[in-house]
Image (tube, rainbow, N blue to C red; front, side):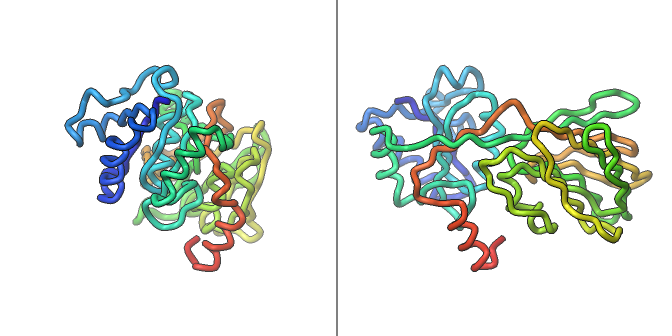
Length: 285
């Protein structure tokens, strides 16, 4: 088996665990490769799996970190079809499957074929600008967010599903989330909780200044289009809270289901609703 290892270099425990895996896994018949940044950090360039033809080079990928590291990995691996095992080295998350102390047992099960692979929907965003046409294209796993700057005034958003205008919303912004992202920023803004195995788009407005504003859950076959009205205001588009792009007045943001999918390795350790219950009880949503 050829395994790619992506490491959150900002967490010492993740770095230490990666070093141990580099030593231990070859003895179990697993050839380990590192993401380019980690290979450079370890001064081990020959172990880098590079950035091209990953499906040919690797059988699976292990992410040592937390939900944020897994979100970044999902975007990086989009289109490869590689299954991802998220290993939690932080607080309890929604995406990671196994705790660090359970990793050896996880490898036993993976080597014996005792696991499942769950397909998750990704989302694609396109920014269209009147003067230049397509100004940016992005892929995300959790959400696409339009939000005003810290000192900006309220912005106005014309929201469409396909060609139908569903409303004009004075607001601080808007979130278009995937089912996986429904328990993130979307939930804190009042959006619904959606089973991550579903295929939908969730549109939620941030602090809308209009009575009766509600979230919309639409088919993954539909497009959500938001036209921005924000003269002389700072407005940002963010993808998974990790990638940013400056928007301009009259920009259009089109969000749709991506052809690419994320594939998560599931060992049955964590049920979505059990994790949800725990997080809600601890007030860590």
